[in-house]
Length: 148
Image: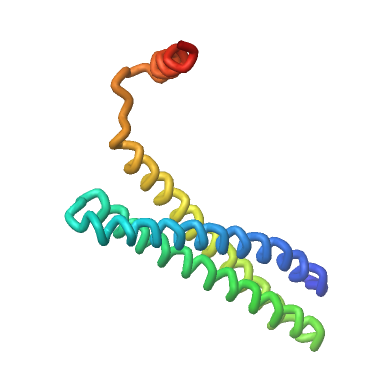
């Protein structure tokens, strides 16, 4: 395989964008944690609150690892470019492969975190279950109330 300096350079915007997305997810979780902390100080015995805290703690760990793998991917990519510059093609190819593996690991953790966040939202919605089995009926009833 002939690796040019442009090949690893293609990963730079992808890694940067994914890191920005991870940072946004982290900031959203940080806001949730702060709001949950306020609730926790007033309602310490709430079981649902304890489950949410456990879920958020795990998701924060996942985001930390997602970011770590993203950074490792970025660093490997930079070293790959450096070794291409030094004309050490074998080392550059290995570093590029490692960079891709780090990137895949980061995306895999992101997928797990998204699944957990969806589960957390479903858990939060479980207290607000609809009384009617039909969502269409619920919307019709809601619309009729708003019109009157």
